[in-house]
Image (cartoon, rainbow, N blue to C red):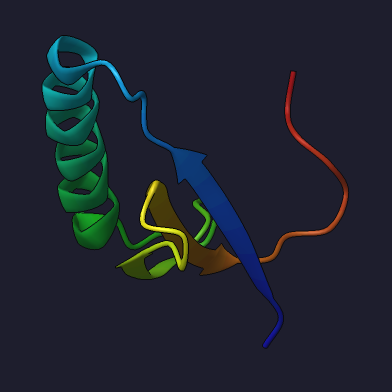
Length: 67
């Protein structure tokens, strides 16, 4: 299995940060529940090493994105 590491950086603005964290949590919870052969598989999430974002580990799917 090959993985894709997606890194999302947080805004340093306090007002934006709350909304970003809420949106990321919502997205992660949705990804956890999806299981279909045509949907990229979610594996895990961790705070990035620099503490300024999150790293999301996903299934790697070759061929680029769908337009």
